[in-house]
Structure formats: C-alpha cells, structure tokens
Image (tube, rainbow, N blue to C red; front, side, top):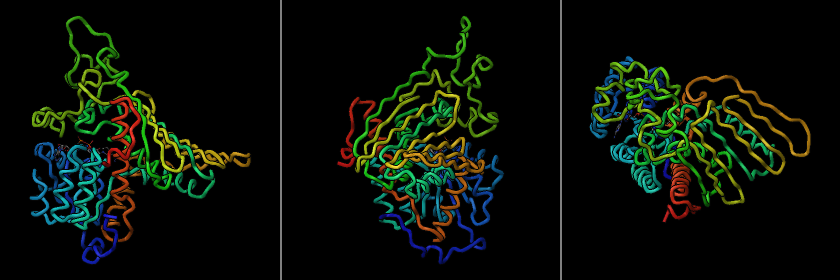
Length: 417
Ligand SMILES: NC(=O)c1ccc[n+]([C@@H]2O[C@H](COP(=O)([O-])OP(=O)(O)OC[C@H]3O[C@@H](n4cnc5c(N)ncnc54)[C@H](O)[C@@H]3O)[C@@H](O)[C@H]2O)c1
C-alpha cells in the first residue's frame, strides 16, 4: 500500500506547542469555507497560506475568515516559502492531479478532497507520486465519518443482516441543482457527476461491503428538467432571463434562483469572476452543461453483490436513504432522519437506532475528517482512506459516465488496461 501509515512523523511534531502548518490549494467554498474555518479554530494547526490563481478571490476568502495568510499562485513556491507540513487540495476536480503531484514532489503530506482524480489514469499518477514521496495522502471521503454511516457499518459488520448481497442508496439532493450554476456542470472540470458526486457513494458502498472488487457498471442519466424550456416562470415580452441570477430580471419570480452570499466585494462577485469566468450563480436552466440532473447507476461486485445508486437533483429533499439486504434481514438508514432500522428476516424484534442531531458540516462528518487527518499526521491513528480506494471509487464513476454516454455496460477492468 502506498499510504504512509507509520507514526514516525509524530516524532518532531507533537501537540499544540508545535502546531502543524497547513496550506490550502483552492480558496473556495470547501477550501476556505469548510477547511479554512475548521483550521482557524484548531489550536493544533495553523492555516499559513492559500494558493489560488485567482488572487482576488483568495484575498476575499481570507478577509471573510478574518485570517492573515500569505497568498500564492504557485504550489511549489508556497510550500517552499511557508515551510508547510501539509496541504489540502480543494480546487475544481480536474486540477486535483496536477496539484497533488506538485505537493508530493515538494515533500508535504496531502489531503485531497474527493474525488481523488477525475480518471483512473490521474489516480494512478497520484498513487505513483505518493509511493515515491513516502508522504501521507488522505482523501476527503467525509461520508465515512458520518455518524449514521459509521453506525450502519457497525450494524453490517455485526452480522445483524447476515451476508449482504444487495445495497441501494437513493440520494435526493435539492442543493445539487446548484451544480448547474457552477463549474461542476462541466464533464471536463468535474469528470461528470457520477465521478464528482457519485464517487462518495461508490466509496461508501465499497467501505460498507468490505471492499469487494467492482466488476461492471450500467448507468442511465439525463438532464430532464434543467433546460431552457423548463424555466419555472412565465417570460414577459422582450424581457430576457439570466444569464446569472443576481442580474436576472425574474429573480423575484424564480423559485430556483441561486443566491450567493454577500456578492458585492465577496469571493464570487463580478471582479473575481472576471478573472477566470468561474461564477456561482449561472441560471441553472439556461447554463450550458454536459452532465446530468438525475440518473441511476447499477454496479455488480465480485462475490455476487449488486448495488444501485440513484442521484436526483430535482427534489425538495436533502437526504441519502440506504437499503441493505442480507441473508438474515434488511437494514434501512436515512442520513437526514439520522435513523437506522434493522428488520430481521424471520421475525423478531425490529430495532431502531436514533442518532443525535447534527454537529458540524455534512452531518458532523467534516470535523471528524479534519480531526482524523491531523491525528493521522501526528501518527495517532492509521490512514484508512487508501489511495486504491479512491481510485476504485473514481473507476466506478468513470465507468458510469462511459455507460450512459455510450449506452453500454462497462467492464471496470477496461479502465485499468
Ligand atoms: N467532500 C465533500 O463533501 C465536498 C463537498 C463539496 C466540494 N468538494 C470538493 O471540493 C473541491 C472544491 O469544491 P468547491 O465547491 O469548494 O469549489 P469552489 O468553486 O467553491 O472553489 C474552487 C477554488 O479553486 C480555485 N481554483 C481554480 N483553479 C485552481 C487551480 N488550478 N489551482 C488552485 N486553485 C484553483 C478557484 O479560484 C476557487 O477559489 C472539489 O474537488 C469538490 O469536488 C467536496
């Protein structure tokens, strides 16, 4: 395995007297908003720098966080000047690979937000660089730290449902319609939503099932609703909608208008967008896009296990709902309800686990991910998100993309040839 798991790193870095120095590559929602906020509050870590080609955006993100950090547009320069221990990569997905290679070649540990990379080829390059450098690389698979999914894993591992042969996840993500307002809607930037979003779910399947090898994938997907002919308001003669929500004359009429926080003077206002064209509030109906707004993917694993993953971004809900079926019973889980129900197959007591409410971003998963990364760096626990896991999650997502675009069942193996 390529990930360094041993504890020698802790020898020269211990406790709050010697805080770890972090740099964040990509000072956007996830970089500044999630990790920046968590690092700022952590007394065993220092947020030393941002690296972002959009300097204005990074400066504004730093101002919003109320931190004084140096800002770079070159990863190698940032690492050399700031004497960093680790970097966190939160760029658009298509740039994960180049930034991970630069960081590893510069000799720092890395947390790469999901997906590891948008292709198997990219994942392989990161794995090779990680092996050469001997540095720790963790993946931002925060769902593995979600309290409901941790409990679900515990229940599956206890054998309460016997040998698992089917698993289903239905993801209803109201917020996902916002993908069509941002870079995420482009296959070239995100790898498509089966990679960008689905990699979370394919990783969870593998993790819950004990890492069976995925064999083949069939997927169906489409943009069914977020097209110009489905605008949810009536057009007035001669008044054109869009192109961005904050400029749109129908902002009061549109139930799907995307509101970006303090747009004037913030990281996503017109000045910052002028630099790279990356906006957050393109009209989700009018924006050009080449990924889906709903779809279903089916995966067959070795050992006779089947999984299905539905993802729908046209919905009033924000929930992931799981059904897991084994030889001895069936388990249902809902992240939103924070509930797990176990139904034994031949009768017996139905057991319900009700978990406590949210504590932190992504249902409490983000603070646990951050804490885990810091503990892994200090040698206090092993790294469980192996890069091979990240590569398999990308492989299933990439296979699903190929499947719906080329209308065929894709053998996962073909991506590794
Ligand atoms: N684990 C999760 O739950 C989760 C949730 C949301 C997003 N993500 C991941 O986080 C990453 C960032 O997503 P986001 O929503 O924060 O995006 P964002 O658009 O808010 O931020 C991206 C930032 O990267 C910067 N950037 C663009 N190109 C760059 C480059 N080549 N080098 C350095 N910086 C660059 C942009 O200027 C911007 O500041 C993505 O990989 C996404 O998949 C993970």
